[in-house]
Structure formats: C-alpha cells, structure tokens
Length: 77
Ligand SMILES: [Zn+2]
Image (cartoon, rainbow, N blue to C red; front, side, top):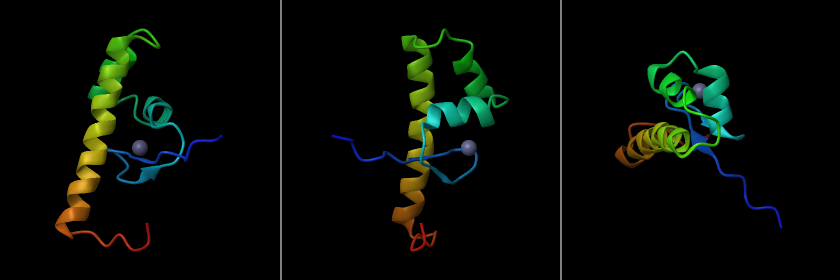
C-alpha cells in the first residue's frame, strides 16, 4: 500500500531529496528569499503550498533540463 517514494530535486543543494522536500526547504533553506516568503504563510495554507510547489517545480525543472541537455552525467544518480 505504500506509494513509491517521490524524489524531488533541491533547487539550492542541486541534489535529489528523498524525504519531504518542503521540510528540507524549511529546515535547510529558510534563509532563501523564496523559501522565507513561503514560510511566512500559515502552515497548511493554500498560499504556502503554492509557493513551496513553485520552488519544488523549479528544482525539478532545472534537474530535468540538465538531464535532457546531456550536460550532466546522471549514471550514478
Ligand atoms: Zn537543499
């Protein structure tokens, strides 16, 4: 019944994060402007979710574009 673990790419560390990336962002990158802007929103609020998703999507987009460009050796990831 367990869903497969979703891996997200951290925009700031430039690594894949196995656990909940929103928690990783809040703990490790709270000083980043975009993360700080999300964290001022109430927890579980729609605004917070939207802002967090935007950061997560940017990280995943950056990862996907690097992979498709072949600029990065991904064989060991
Ligand atoms: Zn990170």
